[in-house]
Each structure stands twice: as C-alpha cells, then as structure tokens.
Length: 412
Ligand code: FDA
Image 1 (cartoon, rainbow, N blue to C red):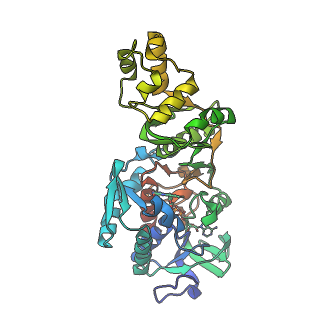
Image 2: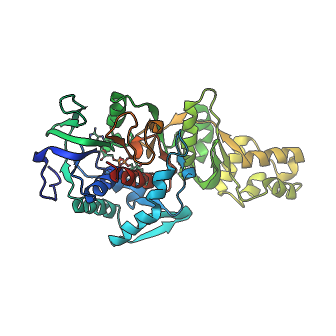
Image 3: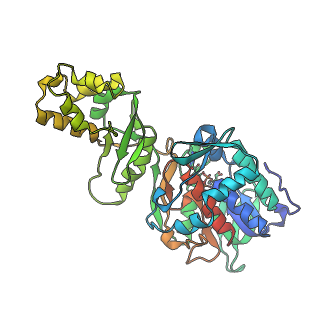
C-alpha cells in the first residue's frame, strides 16, 4: 500500500459506506467530504504516484480555480447541468480551503489562480483533508471487476488486484483519457456502459490542432511565432496567444477553440474552420485605408503592429508583396478582412498525448445535477472529468472536479 490508511479503519475491513475509484482531483475531494461527514470511505487508484495530473498542471503550479466561474465556461450537452454543483461549492469556497492550508497563490490574466510555489501543495492539502475524514487507501490497486450482486443486494462489489471491497455507494472518479502515460484509462466509460448509462464519445480537447500538409508547408516560415489574437470557432471569442508550430496551431487561444472545433464532430456536416483576428483592437480597414497611397510595403506597415518576421512571412504567403500605393481600396478592404478573419481549417488534433482534457463522457442527462447519482442506478455516482463536462482553459476543469466532488461527497 503506497499510502497507509491514516485512520484506525484498515482496508482489511473490506466493507465501506462509499468506495471512490480514482484518487485524483474529484475523487479526493469527494472522499474527504464524505469522510468528514462520518462516512466510511475507501479510495482506490491504480497509479503508483498520487494525483499526477494535479502535479503537472498549470506548468507545475496548478491553476486550481478561477475568480469568475459560470456555466458559460463549460461545454456540456446539458448546458444547465453544472449550475447546481458550481453554486453550492464555489471558487470562493475552494480559495478558502487553500487559505486555511496556508498555501500562497497569485492571480494571472482572466482571473486564473495559481500556487506561488508548487502544485504538490494542492495534493498535500487534499491528502490531509482525506486524512481528516479517516479515508482508507487501496493504492496501487487495479480494478478488475465491478458488480452489483443479487446476493448482496444494493451493494457494489469492487474486485481489485489486492482484494474485494464492498460498499453501498460507488463513486467513479477515474477522469478522462488525456495523458495515458500517467494513468488515464477508459474504466469510467466502461462502468457507465456496464450499468446502462449513455456515454458521449470521448474526444481530445484543450489540444493543439494539426493542419493539412499543404497548409503546413505554406506556413513553415511562420513556425515558432506567437501572437496575441482573438480566436473563435462557433463558440465564444478567446483573446489569448496563438502559436504556429511545425505541426499546426497551439497556444492558449487555440486550446480554447479546440473544444469548439472538436464539438462539431458530434454534428453532421462540414466543420467550420478556426478564425483568427490578428489585429484584435484595431479598425483594420480604417487603418489600412489611412495609409493607402503610401510608398511603404504592406509588410512594413503590418510590422508596426505584428511581429516583423510574421508580417513579412504572412504577406509572402498571401502574395501581398506590394507597397501600399500598389493596392486599390477594394483590395485593402479584402486584406483587412483577412487580417481580422484569417481562416484555418485544421486536419485534426495532436491527440490524447497532448490534450489537457477529454470532451464528451458520461451523459449528464442520466445523472442528478444535485448529487451526481445515476438516476437509473441508485448508489452509483460519476464525478469530475469522466462526465460530459469540459471546462475552458483557466482553472475551470479543477473547479468542476471540486464542485462535483463535494456535491457527491455530501450525498454518497
Ligand atoms: P484525474 O485525472 O485528476 O484523476 C483520475 C484518477 O483516476 C487518477 O488518479 C487515475 O490514476 C485514476 N484512474 C484512472 N483509471 C483508473 C483505473 N482503471 N483504476 C483505478 N484508478 C484509475 N485543469 C485546470 O483546471 N487547471 C490546470 O492548470 C490544468 N492543467 C492541466 C495540465 C495538464 C498537462 C493536463 C493533462 C490537465 C490539466 N488540467 C488542468 C485538467 C485537470 O487536470 C483535470 O480536468 C482534472 O484532473 C480532472 O480531475 P478528475 O479527478 O476527474 O481526474
């Protein structure tokens, strides 16, 4: 057992009120909440190291929540589903917990909150909260089978590599599929299907987008350039940095719109491309027309507001290599439209190896928004990323893990 049980109860007792599968963000939050209510809780995880995803999050500093969290920060087939849990355990509640544990933090753009020191502090905090709840640990332990036997009606039986455990409530907190090398697995989706719950096909999200070879070869001179843009793809507009890479597009603006580009896979028809406004604060058409008739090259004019290397390579790419006085007004209007609405059609994504989260998952229509319990399967709960709830970049995915974890921990 990598993590000794901190209370007098030992896994040898084998019978629990609540078993939580997955000791990540949502699982630990749920286990701590249930344990502190006096429930007898076991956390099961197959990983050797605790909560690796928290440890690597936010560049090692864990963007643990956001000052402003609302339903509009999430993609979910059931758009109002997240409201109840988010309003009952808020960002302010989690900030209070962080403060009580003496963890210093700072705010970055758009209300994102990060640890000053290290993400490990969040893991230690959750572990200590589990300790306060007397939570037992079965870790590392492989889940072999989950059943709901007739003989022991109303009890879930969890067979693992270190023995069988039983409980009246089973919480599935096994996360999504991103970063398989640190323990992501499809167990949660399989359990949902086993118990008859619908699952929306999982897809990599918050993920760099790839471009087709013909576009890539044309963009090769721009690789490595990062610039602040407004990006959109059907959903909201995101004002952040976009990075052109040797495989396609990355950077926070692209990760944000990747969720919406991917979501189009669920609908019929052709996918809309990603649109980038390269000069977001500017009346671009007015500015270009102001300079119409000048002898300066368009690329040199653009270099006043964009990285010089980008301005030159981008004008080459578009074939706009003339001085300003070589363009008619109609042409300048077309150039302005391209600058503020540059369309790029991705060919795919860089997959789960590079994705921060998973889009899709257990369909929330089958769950109670108050408790996360499966309507058709009493005692079975799903929380965190395994559900069809996907947050924007910026601490929203952890906030969902905390809020859904607490909602379930208060009920299970
Ligand atoms: P999580 O993945 O945390 O935990 C699932 C647990 O289940 C794991 O411990 C795993 O070992 C276990 N498990 C899986 N399969 C199992 C099986 N078969 N048997 C037993 N156990 C099993 N979000 C955010 O808000 N701010 C941020 O800064 C970041 N940064 C970030 C960086 C990177 C690189 C990634 C990949 C992701 C992020 N995220 C993020 C997303 C965030 O990490 C994620 O949404 C939450 O960790 C989800 O919490 P869960 O508890 O649902 O899953």
